Image (cartoon, rainbow, N blue to C red; front, side, top):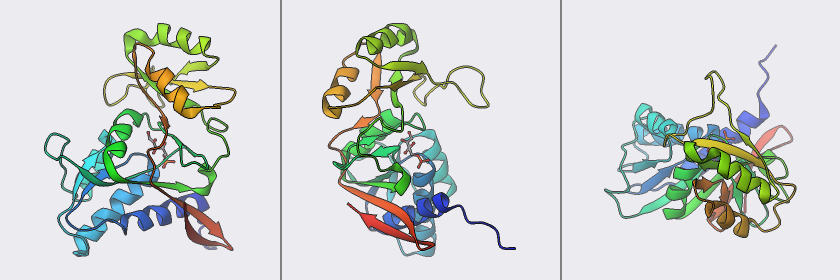
Length: 236
Ligand code: 5RP
């Protein structure tokens, strides 16, 4: 009996490959975080190794993407050493019809927003399960917070109508600690009517580093879908 292929994994791989294929030689590439971005990093490494792609440098958005880039032979640079990023490829937890996002499922949204928003072209790679009509309908909104500010920030978020919970580690006792040494609060909002306003309001709470709303940052969304058993890529 043939092994079952996981359709979500297949969609992630195909969409990541489609994005990696768009990267041109000689460019600076923002390297996203999460499982879909990880496939994109792997495919970029494959293209470099085969000689199809030359002279790229990556700017990682997390320890995860830094480790993967080293593993797949992608030279790295920093925001001190380069004054631009040509293209960034990153995943998302939710994408709305205006291409606004919720990110931060991997607690990497602070660096992701920095790198993705600096890119001349920001390409989002998702499987079709990530498409929503309204942000916040399937995924809690991650907010990175200074450890000493957890209680006041939670109270401020409750006043805004959100239900905050501290993200706890898996196979790690205690809270998740971000790559910057902070903690993450995941917030349930009944509805996010105005993502642009909420993004600013949350970032104005003292002690908040960054939240996972990415508004007006995305240039292109590549969506992986399985149709009639075959993976197809759609863009919007
Ligand atoms: C990490 C992220 C990821 O890009 C997002 O969680 C999507 O991950 P995946 O591709 O594994 O579904 O924002 O902070």
